[in-house]
Amino acid sequence: MFQHILVPLDGSPLAEQALPVAAHIARQMKIPITLLQISSMSIEYGPYFSQAGMVREAIIEEELAHARTYLQTLAQSPLLAGIATQSEALPGIAPASILSYVDAHPIDLVIMCSHGFSGLKRWLLGSVASQVGKHCTVPVLIVRAEQALSRDTAAKLRVLVALDGSSFAEAILEPAINLVATLAGPSQGTLHLTQLLQLPTNEDEFVYKQAGIDLAALRKSAVLAAGQYLQKVVEQLQHGIAAQRDVHVTWTTEECQDIAGTLLHMAEHGDSRGYNLLALTTHGHNALQAWMVGSIAERVLHEAHLPLLVVHPPQSRFIH
Image 1 (tube, rainbow, N blue to C red):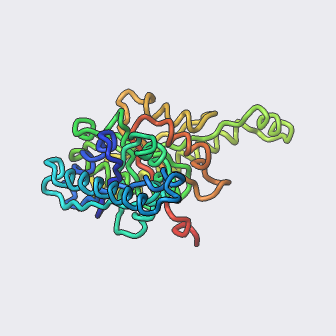
Image 2: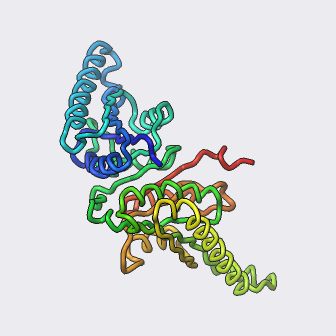
Image 3: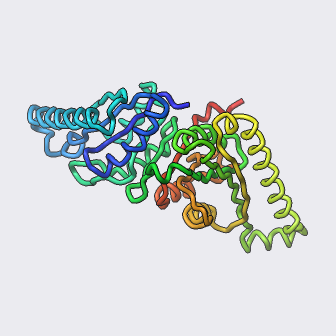
């Protein structure tokens, strides 16, 4: 269960599209929201103010005062009525300052929009959302400006969850179930687990053939093992948190050449009923055993049009 939501904003209407879903979750769970705006003018204009310290400080304070007024207006708006809402305006660089704020406060869910104004006076929210998603140690819900979560879509929420067979990737399951249960109606939320298996390249096939290895048998065994793994995870969830939170859980596994591309296609086009959200951990446990690393996670974060729920658990949780 979530206890405290952080909504980073940049002063733009697009960034504010994270607020309706944050307000809905906060009301359902009776938890507080903190609105955070990072003022980075001193960083952006730094070279021009290097010889004008007093002017620089005055501009920074003016920017912060404007941000405080803006945040206080939002906090008192009808959208957030009845929700314990506080606001913070701080100087700094948006990604690093947001991450530092999360580490220093009892935040356990960050909700932000992936597109905002860019340029000297606004941080590029798409890039910031990606950086926060990749490095934040609490779940991050990235709402897409072009496909925000509404009450209508949330009523029968279907979430595609990417797993890779590791306990590290499974860290997404509990926050995903809690989110589905909170947003969807009773017995209306579905979590669909998938594990994508990388098909061998032509070079791989040649090597296996030269070594006398039955590649077809290996592939069949891998698909079987993935299915058994997902079935086990589903059964554990159905006898645990999914049952407690009244969330349906299903699964599929698939072979593919392009894992990131296949995952994106599955999420956005691969099911007639459609998905409202894609959930995944942003890094695998290590480079050898997990596929959600490097360019794959990066590509999903940048190319997905659906809202994303991402988790980057601390490595220490998985060191025994």
